[in-house]
Image (cartoon, rainbow, N blue to C red; front, side, top):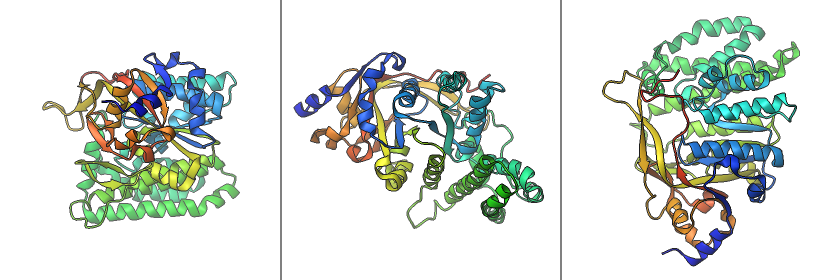
Length: 435
């Protein structure tokens, strides 16, 4: 039975109906401004990746926040160095957009109409003379599989600014990445890349780590020298950050080898690196919309047994600690729908995977998703600051078919509830390939 206080509270939620987000007016979204206040980082979560509704709401809320809240950048759960390819297209329009999305958005998240729509809007705004909106990734590179893209970006800069050292890095560091599989065309390429790293002999892995650390420290130490010699400040800043991201990626991978014998708590190196990148972005941008999985943006440690049996500190927890009221979090929930997933089939080559669609019925009782779906029809935005005690009984939120345990009031400031989800509009075909 639905709690009366919960029902009364949800009557005050901003109704969004079941219409496409593009059809929701600015007036209907106005309550969001009270939720975010003056925060510089507005984080929007997604209950699961590759879902049309969450991507469509990302695009709609970005447009609203640019026009009404002074947002100057979108930051995605995607590789930091790769995102520069997309931002260059937004700035110049040169090259093929589909290629920029394939190369510049990791985890294959760019291979869909929703992200193409996002980026073409960014470009159109710039061309029409509107205030520019930048595109960033905050994540470690190559779908968290290798530091190589970040190192390559640094070396490309060193070729101009520090050519002797750049040649040294090409000669001594880049050969360590010969372990990576040459076939990058599969949906599960990252899994094979990580496996290839784990198979590298320990002395070679330690030499790789030492080389990355030396690169990061030298670029950081010589940054002022490069600027004094007339280097582009943006190129120098990006090189320093990419070197630091490479170090985070290497540490993230190296920590996997400690797992079977570790006697101390795990450290979420990937999320701490993402938080550092968001702070780097805030030195360049006034206000940003950050879009990532609920499990990353929440303020509380991530816990999803049996897959993640011990709490891991999230990027949201780092940012809440560092930014305080300048960090506001909008989580997402959903009632039911169809999820786009993929898994290797017996005839898939290594690194390849076959997509399928899975029906997700109503969430388990006790989750926030079920609580909200039972209490009110349709989609809506609700402020958790005024939530009744019934919300505190929720065990967490769903991530596809799984449950992420959470104190929802402590984790999120507001919830965007979607009544029903559908698969993203991807150009990945039913064999896991794309044109």
